Length: 43
Ligand SMILES: [Zn+2]
Image (tube, rainbow, N blue to C red; front, side, top):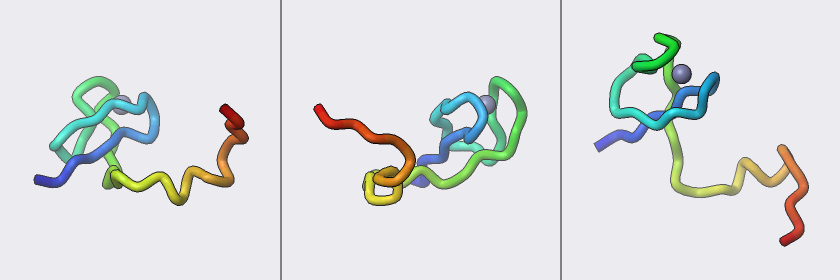
């Protein structure tokens, strides 16, 4: 199973296109390594 995520509305789907905004989705990884530099969350 390949989980994908829409970069526009952040909707998770299994299809290549977002069911909401019809945009092309990207592969959603379960690891959050790449998110490190995006925002600063110090919880
Ligand atoms: Zn979308």
